[in-house]
Image 1 (cartoon, rainbow, N blue to C red):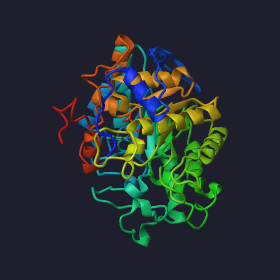
Image 2 (tube, rainbow, N blue to C red; image 1 turned 60 degrees about the vertical axis):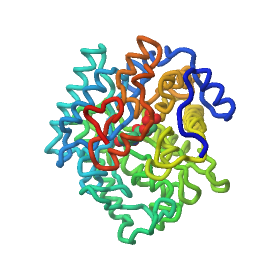
Image 3 (spheres, helix red, strand yellow; image 1 turned 120 degrees about the horizontal axis):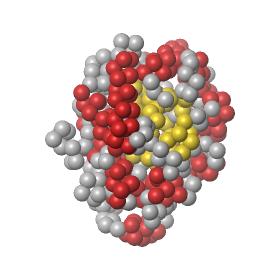
Length: 433
Ligand SMILES: Cc1cc2nc3c(=O)[nH]c(=O)nc-3n(C[C@H](O)[C@H](O)[C@H](O)COP(=O)(O)O)c2cc1C
């Protein structure tokens, strides 16, 4: 056991510990850099703060936003991030991660439209601008639970993710994949009807498209070579692109640049040295997506929330103690984000996993932006705990320690239970474990 609690009352404490650990944690002295506007393709955002997708497991059974969904997004809208990366929304019934994951259909598209109209109206009234809103379109693959119990649809057998091997009929066929690709065309049509500014072909955290990126051992046209492993993602893009009719509507991805599993079971990992990241393929993939689909930005993340959540969202309290210090995890994430931004200077990169630093999270975000290591900083758990941290940063230059996320993992426990997810510490009248 190396570390369990947060011990950094001051920025200097974080700087000292990061230096000791040789972790890349670039903290700014001021958060001002977060409040410069930014052009993303044909769109503008008012500031560099994004709310990352945070699934609330609170949709209706048919996949429409319900009361708690509406409350969550009203709080987000009031807070004033420049961009809201709207949570995972299923592309097919069998693709849902829970019986209450949102699922966009012809029957409920108007409910999504009303939600988006409300988000924009609230933010305009409170902040004087509306956020850019990107919808995350997903196929949950291995983590599909459309009826509340696991019904995995996997790309290939993956021992690091399976306690016992799954039956062969859980492996999706090439024909299944072709059908799933087509679903992205329909979802993109509905996404425009609902009024989203763009759609994310979700490719992170080892859901289906992401899992295929490491399908070295899968036979056939979706496995083996880089070209084959990236085929599903690119075909989903091609399908989505074929139904774009709104000139300003764009496509992008939240992409795992590193899974944290050794070769041949992880993307973005060295073939020869254990868990060391190797970003050659992720950078090549982003370059190709940008060239073919004109991405205005890319949202970069890492890890798997089920098997190595410390890689995905460094924490102080979780159900295991990782054998690395959380600041080393932050360092890996910040280094990966900045390597991508450095390799692709013309493509704005949105970084992930800032919440671990609690009241200092804004200073890390500003340090990344100020130094050109990324263009925008995305907050997940912090947005659940205290969305108003955006106002704190703008008005007071820091996040109130009494309101910050404490990385307790409570929101993730609710999510895994398939119950509505939110902050069990700062919003405990509504969310209880
Ligand atoms: C309850 C919960 C729900 C999440 N839902 C999503 C999601 O829908 N899509 C996604 O890409 N990531 C999702 N994530 C991951 C977060 O967006 C984010 O990457 C992670 O929490 C690390 O960022 P943070 O340190 O700011 O929290 C979720 C995380 C949690 C804890």
